[in-house]
Length: 251
Image 1 (tube, rainbow, N blue to C red):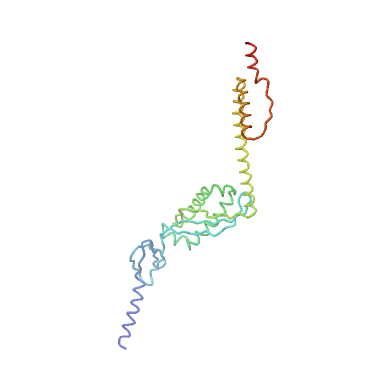
Image 2: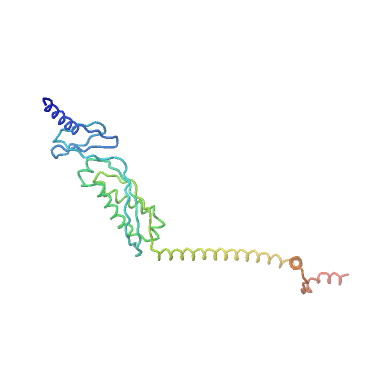
């Protein structure tokens, strides 16, 4: 029974010692409050606090990956879409992150949601789908500027997914199909135009040599006879024999 006071003293001593000694990891900092007034921040490693006088708030300096919940957005051209994103940020000034805002994680999340709806509401659907990198950069600059007084640096904002209504998906599919048909017709027309140019050039060459026209005519007949095993009746133009007739007359 004589050891009871000693045991009690040791017990309270252990409690007080555990409240005085704190160990912070390399990526952690502790903002120290002494009698309610901030005394700066400490860490990493071993720090000692004054019991019942000093209080600390632990802050991590690692990059935080925050998922922005899906937001209902109406674009500039009045299309309703659902968009979610991800924000990468880190605390660079622990003291300001604790003093300037009540909960910097919650505040950054709410700011990201409202900024996402605001920026996408000023963009067209085509811009949202095709120029996403520009919108990401705009979101990053706005959120980073707003969180700067809190000692937070936003390094990246990325739009993850854009969910379109089913009616808009069908309309875009029809538009894409029509665009493919248009390109096919344009390519076909360009091919016909190039072929007609070559035929026009060939016609000019043949027009300069009547004998070449006759040889081409005979070549065409030869091709027809080779492809079809049947009797082919064709007219023979008199001009084909004009050269021989002229030669006979001269003799």
